[in-house]
Length: 455
Image (tube, rainbow, N blue to C red; front, side, top):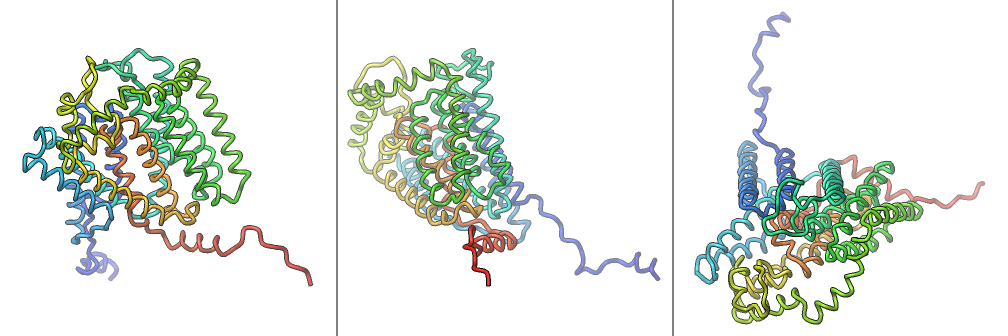
């Protein structure tokens, strides 16, 4: 009888459900891989790397569609940034279709690139849904940042003027890490460094791992200074000030904060010491460089010329991506170099998309900050708070640096920025019941209960 039962086929109701071809976790891992590999391809500024970034974004979106189809349901989680992103895409598309752009091919190319940014942000926000995904994601980011920073430090100690000691930069530049321009390396670290620093300051991380996170954060922050990027130094100082505002009122263990702060100071001091005279020279030049710019330096002159460009087409601009093609008509100084960017992302946005595009960008940023700040209550206790604060501080850093450089014109940095913005403004991650019970218990119990009188 037992053998007959063993040979009896299972009923249809108990049949195993076929597994989907792709899953949310795999899509999230693939999207993060694309975002972290793009900086290693010289910031994805070469035609082949731009094509690879766009192709990967399309494949990820197709993978998300396959996942939805195999799940037999279409589930799209809302994000407030989708509206301004679609509005900006509509503006660029209108420039291209109506011929309002000064160079249709450039606008078309930039439109494809921004579509890739949007697809990456969409896939990440649709697949990053559970708090259990944060811990591995955070440590992947920390490990990646540590490896890239260590490589940049080693390359800075033994440079030969080539990327990866192999590829020669065609137009030269101040090489640091995988970037031709040291400012763009600093921009990458500005977005990544807040993750280990926030992990080190939160209760979401175990005490032993807090020291490891602090060490990684110190290494990454130290390379910002060693890169010699003055804009990066300023942006990181702003990030530290912002973190101090959030860490101080939420941290109950002041001794731990003091130890962490001293540790960071010592490690960063050692890295600055490794920089030697070059580091000292770059820091000393900040004052003289600032005076030179205010009295009519190159960056300020380009910004003034950009305003003259904007006045000619104030509403819709000259067309997305057309700044390097139109600017020679308005350049007010002589140079043998080709000015390919405005060295100010805000001025370039204004000239290329006019007041319409600038207003959409402001709408985008207002939504980011308003939604992110609403999730930062008790941030040290929750995965949502840790992820949101790290992403938001990284966005602030790159926004500060954008006043002095063009990080958002570098595809690898821009893609990471828009993904961090989407994460900051997204819906809170779903916490497990065990995690919610633990957090509720920790909030109910007082940390230092007053002693009761004995009977």
